[in-house]
Each structure stands twice: as C-alpha cells, then as structure tokens.
Image (tube, rainbow, N blue to C red; front, side, top):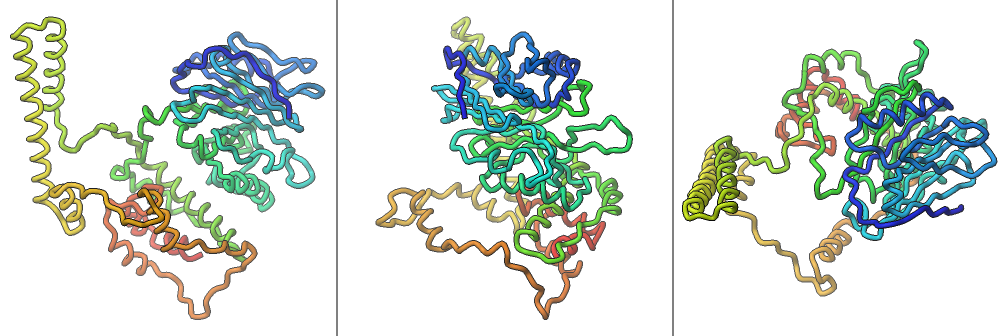
Length: 488
C-alpha cells in the first residue's frame, strides 16, 4: 500500500453532520454533473464523495469547483475516485491508501483534537466497486481484504453488486446469489461491521420494465463508528443513472437526537392483515446446521419485522419529554425567562421582584405537577407496575457491590461475577448437523397463545422494540405464522 498526504492546517474546525455521498456514475459526464449540482439541496454540503465507475478521458477524472479528486494511480481506468471537499482538506489532514486492486481506495481523515467529539482522532472511508468474475469468490475483491479490524472508525461503502435478504428482504434469490452475498456479509459481521442500509430501500432502479428495483449500493461501519452514524438515506433526486445517490451523516453523541421509532399503538392492523394473507416463511434448511438455522431465522424474522414496520407510523419523542409536563408549565417557563432577560437589561427592584415571583410560581407548579402525577400513578398501580411504584415512592437505592479482594471497582466485580456464574464455553462446531428428537411434538398455535397471554402488552421482547400487543395481534390474524417461525 502507498500513502499520499494532502495539505493540513488548523484541525479545530467543526463539521456539524459530516455528510458523505456515495453514487455510481455509469461513465456518464451528465450524471456526474447532475450529482454535484444536486448538493445544493442538502442542508450541509458533503465533505467526501465516493464515486464508482466515473467518467474519464485518458485516465483523467473530471473536476468540480470546491473538491479535490483522489484515485488509484495508472495504469488503468480510475473506477473508485473519492472527491474531498476543499473545506475539509484545509482544516484536517487527509491521506489516501492505494491497494493492489484498482476497484478499492481508502481515505484517512485525521484530527489531533478528535472527530465527532469522540476520543478517536482518525476516520477511514473505503470505497469499493465489485465486478463479477468467473472464479471464487466470484467478485473482483475477496471479502477479507475489504473488512479488516481497525480500532478507530472505519466506513466501507460502494457498489457491491450483491443481493442479500438483509438489505432487500423481499427479493427472491437463487442459491448461488445467496451463497456469494452471504460470504461478504458474514465476513463483515465477524469483524464486526454493522450494516447501515435501511432494509427494503432500493438503490438501483433499472431502466427496463422487466427487472425489479434492487439494493446494490451498501454501507458498513465498524463498532467504533456505528454509534456515531446519524442517518443513511437517499434524499437526492435522480441523476440519470440507474443508481440513486446515498447520503450518510454523522453526529456527535452529545447532540444526537433519538432515532425515529415505530409508533406501534397506531399500527394499521387492517393493512397488516391483508399483507399477512400472502406472507409465508421461507422453508427451513433441509440439512440444518447451527449456522444455517440461525441464518434462516434471522432472514425470516427480518422479513416479518420489515412488513410490520412498513405499516407503522414513525415517532421521535423529545429527549426532555416528561410525563408530568403540561402547557401551563411551558407558559410559566417562558414568563420566568422573559422576566430574567428583562432584569439583566434593567436591574431595577421592580424587575427583580418580578423575576423572584415568576421563578417561585414556576418551580411550585413543577413540584405540584410531579406530586399529582405520582399520586395518579400510585392510585392506578397494577400488579405489573408495583415495582415501578415502589421505586417512585422510595427512590433509587444506593449503589452497592460486594467486596472482593481481587476487584477494586464495580466494573471488575461485575466481570468477576460474570466469569464465575457464566463461564465461557467452547464454540460449537459449524459442521455439526442438527437432528429432530424422536419424541418431538410440533408446536401448536394454542401453546403460542398461552405464552403470549402471560406477557405485558407494553413490553418488548427483543432489540426490534416490537410490543407484545403487536405480536398478539399478528398471532390473532394469522395463527400459523409464529409457530412456523419458531418451529421450522
């Protein structure tokens, strides 16, 4: 690999969202110009633009004001150039990393004072363009060369030319396509890298009327970067290419808003019932192994989750939302701050008196609202909420941890107890084949109904945050669905 260092000046600049754009320009100058002119529609212009299959003439890339292009050196046509904003280039240090393959290029962004208000001072962005080949792994770059372990943030994006159910749950795949794409996704998840694409959001719309839209442009972030990703979406208009531009934004954790989550209480059950009529789970693997069975369950549950989330409206509650807040408190808060600003401009006794009176009224109203909310909650407490009521009534107990001679802080105590209570086991062999028990009886819908009946409607059983009430509704609409998912 070779390094090329660009200009570096003051590194204290603040980039609010650090947008990065990825797009496939099928060798068209019109698509290239349309892409860069569409950046005016973004709230913040992109700082990095990763392009696959750009237009070129005699290995010379096109230029655009405000950007500097970097590409693998000749010979050969440049396929994965990365355009760096001059604003970024003037404030931070950027270095390009070349690989043996001309379809892969990385750019390292370095700031000695840290990026995204995090302890990491470096960010690596890798652009890839996988071409089909006739020999394994049937793509121009092996997966182990793309996904490598890095202790600092790493973003991998580009046109992977792969179809996978995690990116496009509704796409019907052949066995060959599934095996090829799974090798890349498994390599990414083993490092691990996190898939940033929103499942089901197409990135390629063929010009013919026979082929269906698909998801070929993918993005992955390693563990150090995944918590800093603010969004992945396709907000830009069509540029004339079959591919659509993808925009990735980053945000410091301190100012990151909570993500939009499905509003399950407003789920359209009528539309879900119609969709479930034609929904079927994939057939289980004929000769299951632990790995193949786990992969089958992930794909099947992801298809069902995508179906439910597509019929639920999204919500984003304010991070400072309180259940006891009221419009009256908002009015008192505005009055208190208005009198405070007036008193700073004119510190007269009358203005100070107004500040004290409004502040006293405002905080007394907050205390009354909290007390009223607590009384209402305790009066309507149920057996399922009795422990929450106890916490409200007596407050949080002081944190305590046992005194162990070889552990000096709570973190070491927790690690010691976990190692003792849950000792690590050797991983099972991936070649182990699963067999059914001889006295096995199939799972029935009545057993699933009895298990769901014991669960609270407002509880969520997993990371998808789907309420048990939604699971009960799905089981009531189609009783055979959940047993087929839990009993392949």
